[in-house]
Length: 295
Image (cartoon, rainbow, N blue to C red):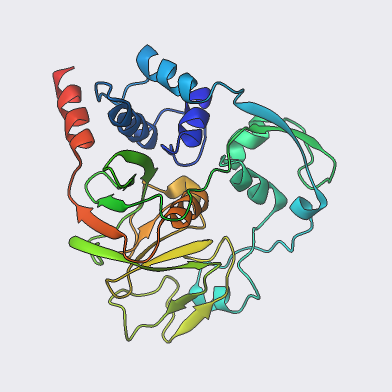
């Protein structure tokens, strides 16, 4: 399962955070990959899927990594639960070197520690075993259109020929702040964004009871993560998130949340004007559901 998750990640069919376990995000990533390869869409990790994944990239899925001074220098600080506490910080940085290293390699902290028993994650020069993920952002303009599947909690990217070229599990709007419907477009991309909570423009209450407008400074643990893709629908966007392990498993306040690394990969490939359609279900999801009902 660990091998499959790393290969899916490299192929841009993201399993979300790599944890070595089968789950809904992984099943959906497999189904999307099957669709892209012309394979029967089942969401199951079978021999045909593994063979296709290995054909895309046969390199080892684990690698040795030497911890750098940059990895451990910080500053590290706990993230307050409330927005007013977050707004008081100079940056929303990682809470520990372990958190930063896990995110660098798209892994859970639990998996990173399990692969490196007894390791000192605060020591520059320490050699770790990590997931060998690839930093392969799209070329600007490679993504011609985007679908946000509200039913399946997923974001799918297509090229100019309509081919599915990427899949990302997503956290999408809740009952009190549902995601929009219909077709919108990318308005712009902001790297290292601030997050502004302005109750005069929003219909939900901030966690922790912020009563007035607050601005949270940039950082990977900012509420909108490391990058923000603004849409032509006011106050809505596709963005990163501070807790990658929760992507696809919780709800958000209307926006579309991805892991920071998935949001960064998508942001590299879009440009203003790219269409973003909010839909209730994809063909791959329907096929997967039908196959599951027959078993």
